[in-house]
Length: 441
Image (cartoon, rainbow, N blue to C red; front, side):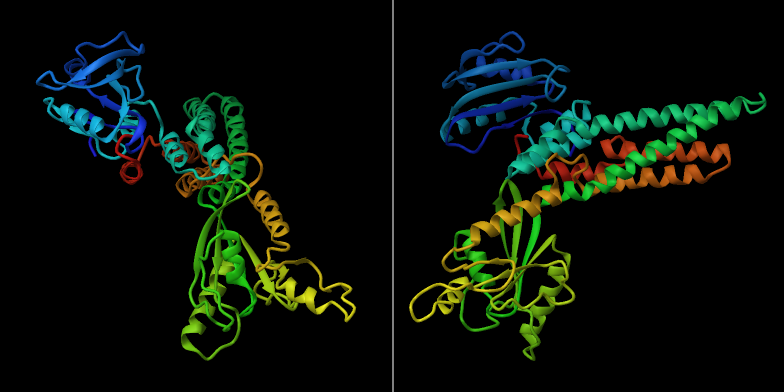
């Protein structure tokens, strides 16, 4: 994707809608705006105008705005038309722009890519914008907004500035190595700064898994023996018939995933084959997949109608006694008085809904414990890996006795931080990232 020419696109949602926003960015944006609107308003002031095609036929009455570069969202001259959001109106305006020489339809994410290329957004802010567009839950929105607003960028810039100062001290020590005690007075603060930075990076990296959980969603595996009510619970939580429910044990053979917003957190529920020994080859493969998926899940619910404990390979599973409606019926004596159903922990009936609200509350508490109340600083594996690279160089810097090697490791650590914000070696990342954007973004 190249940042060349003048581009245009619909930047708002798909019509029909109450309003549609068409953006034009590039060196010919002013010419295109004048061609359709007759004239452009003062910068950053909205003016009502009749848009016309090349033959002078009216297209729509719209608000027109002009943002001259570099003081615009893309860093280039930028014109916006705020139209009525009908399909025919939008199509007519886009067709009129396509007829203007040297204009072309934007590629996915090209407006944001130009903003990045012109220094308006760094890579972490672009990633935050992508996450904000894709956010489905309140936790994802808060985290993405922080990233898009530059929370990680500012922290990385602070770390990098301190690294550069430490590097300057080391290089000055090397340059003045013949001046008696000068090197020690310079090198000691540099090494101390490297230690402090390493501690801060290690803390940010340790917190990264929490950010990735929020962004990607928590995985909750629903495990248990056959016919324990796993699929019935999945359907109850999903609010629809997502899984086939049958009284025949072993109905579920493969993994079934359902995505939910649970208390503001993105959660993926995974229904799976009942865990038991079987000679059926297909069911055995389902059991193998179930065990593997449960082992990698953030949380495992162990469902059992008879309080059987989780297997040894799932020691942290949360026990949930199922079919409490049947237990309650069995617990009544001939006079109809209720007795305790027995058993410890949470008891539910996925059929009647009894206890499910308490289970949802438990899941919400566990999700909050895993993701925290405050948005994480690091939210993507790419960011974490770049910080891990910087931390590795800082660790090696502390172990190096030679001043020249210390300087080189500090320099490499700074370069790794540059990768976080997209200053170096990120073209492949940019290509993949911007392709995930919509056309008008």
